[in-house]
Amino acid sequence: MIPKITLKQIAAEFNVSIATVSKALNDSHDISLKTKEKIQEFAKAHHYKPNKVALSLLNKKTKTLGVIIPNIMNSFFTEVFVGIEEKASALGYSLISCISNESYEKEVNTVELLKSGTIDGFIISIAEETQINQDFTHLIDAINQGVPIVLFDRVADEIICDKVIVNDFEGARHATNHLIETGCKKIAVVSVIDNLSVGKLRVEGYKKALTEHNIVVNEKIIVRLSKNEDLETAMKIVLSDKTIDGLLCLEESSAMLSLDLIKKMHYKIPEEMAMICFTNGKLPQHVTPTITTISQHGKFIGETATKMLVDRLESKTELEFSTKIIKTSLIQRQSTASIK
Image (cartoon, rainbow, N blue to C red):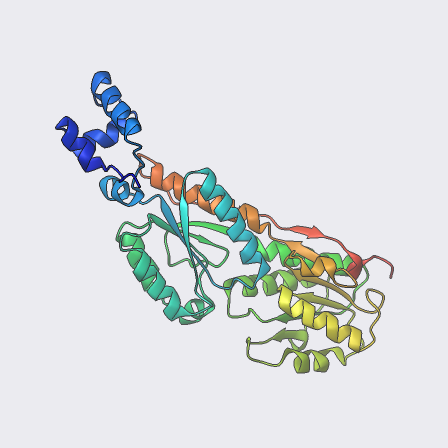
């Protein structure tokens, strides 16, 4: 087995610095053409392969991004990660991906572990416990220490950084308008994300649509549950009111459980009960009946967040922080056919 030659050995061969060898191998114009060609020919003849760790220490860049996702079981975050991975790869960056599992402690520990030189910057969606605690010290400290962060979907005003968000308010308003336009008179909401900023915005968008149609907001049919509460029991109580003819689910898992319950209660969909959910994952497309969804364009969000972070890392000037707002789209399927 041929031993690997190192930058240090090449530098010793030509009596130059390691930095000069690195520049020569990267075709820099900072050194003479003659020296550069000699070093490149020698490296090629000795089958030199770059040591990424050594180069990152030399350049003070790892070309690696940290990604912290709160819940990988949520199809939206899976789509975002696909966008992040594809864009990062295209831009020449690697990823270290972690899951906070909605835990404040895990999020804090992960940030602390990775920011100490392992990565150049973070792409993060804030964990549920972090939003409940309203303690963002670990993220603010990382930014103050020179580690750039891009927040996506779940953000906080207290953290001054680049952000990519979905227009959740307008998405829920659009969904509610669609239910009203298909004939719904009394629309219930089910939310297991009321602790999150996005959940609150979606409820506000729902209320806005009702008000615009002169429909009185009824707090009793807005079902707000924590992840440990019994959704089925709560929904049975709400759906026992036979005047409810529309349902807006604020995320996918509650939509699947609600659909199963509605069918068990022998409602005809959409004749007696129409429904819409966030987001446009695979499940709503393959259940019976298929469910109308609000698409948040997760893959595009991931691509956008990655491009923002890399632009900041590679910019030679200080960039102003910006927030990009991604519009949602309503994808109509069988659960809201306009037949009333």
